[in-house]
Image (tube, rainbow, N blue to C red):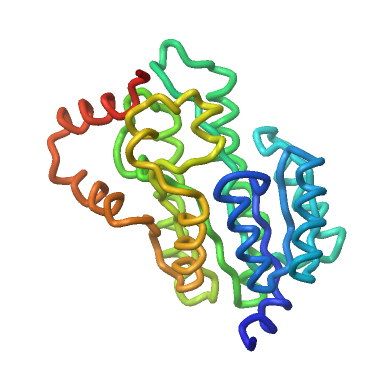
Amino acid sequence: MKNKDQNKMRTALITGTTSGIGYELSKIFAMEGFNLVLVSRNEQKLKAQKEDLEKRHRIEVYNIAKDLSETKAPREIYTDVQSKGIHVDILINNAGFNESGPFYETSLDKELQMLQLHIASLTHLTKLFLPGMMKSNYGKILNLGSTGSFVPCPLDTVYGATKAYVLSFSSALRAELSGTGVTVSTLCPGATKTEFAKKANMENTLLFKRFVMEPQEVAGIAYREFMRNKKIIIPRLYNRMLVLSFPITPSKILEKIGISLLKRR
């Protein structure tokens, strides 16, 4: 009860909250007593989510309907939050999508949106909300990486590159912030059963047929390890073993494995 009483004084801002890992994280943070700022493109889903969470957990939820693949969105979100007098203690940069397939066939427009969302908007939101955390000597930032953060990803070229940025950025920032009261963690899940795979047309790949986790499990592990200030969170043993194998596996073999896992069948 003591932790929940303390949590009621904290606010977590979560992006990409209306489905998948972000949706499950919002439920956990609400259950643990945190007030929430929820950011997603879908205003109707956000409204339903707000009503449900406030009713079930007696917390305060503030919704912001924004598309973070647009360059102005991070500043508009920050300005909106500031105008309401909300102090963000926890920032979770979860929003994301994929555009997979051979690079010469994939959509340039979608890939440019992905770069904006995964790299520019994530960096921009962190830049805006970090000073307030440092001023209060408390803050926690969780950025969504991937097992693909650790190795180049053929047939998922741009996505993997964006997630490599997320891991590098987060790890370096964490080191910079040592001793400030603000911590940075990176969540690096493997394949997860969400709308993500369907939208990216990846459901018929080997990766999403045999090595898939439920978003509830990923979110549960993420919350526990994040609150313990773990640097890199890789849910499930087989994903951790996979990542550990990357440095000792010849690159040609890694490339063949990557293609076999992501090739559509």
